Length: 114
Image (cartoon, rainbow, N blue to C red; front, side, top):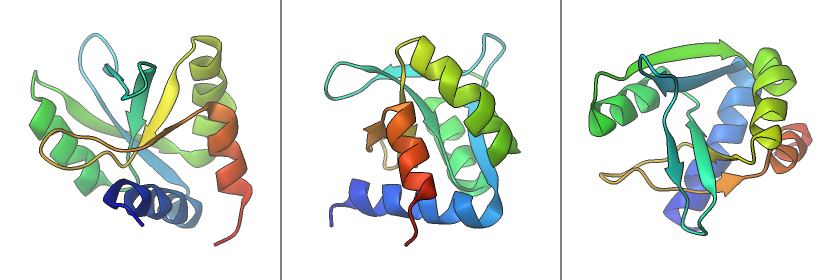
């Protein structure tokens, strides 16, 4: 499995277990980034430490926040789908890269068992 694949699997396992999703945001909201396939991606992490690393790498005064998994699934994922955003999960490394999924794919993967 690739590094990005391993990070994605860890994301789904961790958030199913902790029931918490982590994000980074600034005064203007959460940053979006262009995925490898050209889709605009909104990224989330499975632990506060991962999100803190991302905030540090991206800089610009970003800070870390969290929300319950149920809130994320019920509000953030539908809003992201409506806005045409894909969901980046546990992006890592010095350039913060990783896999992105549609909101539907995220919900399907969260429903799957390991």
